[in-house]
Figure (tube, rainbow, N blue to C red):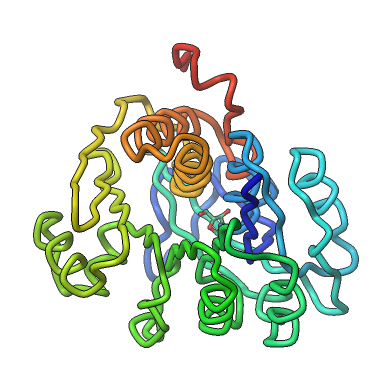
Amino acid sequence: MNSVLNFGSINIDHVYRVDHFVRPGETLNCRDYHRFAGGKGLNQSIALAQADASVVHAGKLGAGDGWLKTLMAGKGVDTRFVETVDGPSGHAVIQVNSAGENAIVIVGGANRLIDENDVQRILAGFGPHDYLLVQNEVSAVPQILLSAKAQGMTVVFNPAPMTLEVPDYPLDRVDILIVNTVEAHSLTGESEPERICEIFRRRYPHAAMVLTLGSRGAIYCNPQMQIHQPAEQVNAVDTTGAGDTFIGFFLAELIRSADPNSALAFASRAAALCVTRQGAADSIPHRTEIEMPITE
Ligand code: RIB
């Protein structure tokens, strides 16, 4: 069976529901406050597991936050490489406005303590049948991309959050790049999806790209094909984790079916369900729910 090794962040999300995002100089009361499990890495691992993929998570958290590891294991994620450190876990401060949009500040904490030794030690057990997934919330991303490709793995990169360093990463080692329009603009200088796909194909003729367009859906492109999947229209309560849900379900279904059409449709339905619920990891649906009509 193909496994996905996800080198990913593990965060505690502090979520503040507000009427509008706080403005410079303003002090704002929130409507409510919740603490959730999150992190793009943790969310994507849980999405993969709930979409029935075999997923091994590699990441770090503070010694007092074992509940996050227990939660992941309970959702079906293999947590043998989730390791504890003496410092604090990563966390996120998230405002969610009345339209369900979010504004996020992250603090790396333990997520930034992954080093080259961890990368070599953990990757040693994986090979050409396996997938490597990584986002941009952990340290050592360039080493992860280089070493995973050297092991013959299929490399999937979600450069979120985008930073100034990403264009200098070894992106030629990436087999599937998953970006939103903001990230794609930073990499290509273009905003128009057709132009983004054109540039991507020219630069990386061996690779595929998934371009997520929010309420306009998503595009899959490689040198041979381009597919557009419209988004399902739902009333968004909280969009946090929707991108992560999309990625986990897309990859799980691509591995299962080898069909990007069905992977896009499956992912789009999962993301639509996710935005009708509060929180990040807590709002990720299970594969069995994808078949049912969405109730809001
Ligand atoms: O993609 C959503 C995630 O981004 C949140 O769970 C938060 O932790 C940040 O990493």
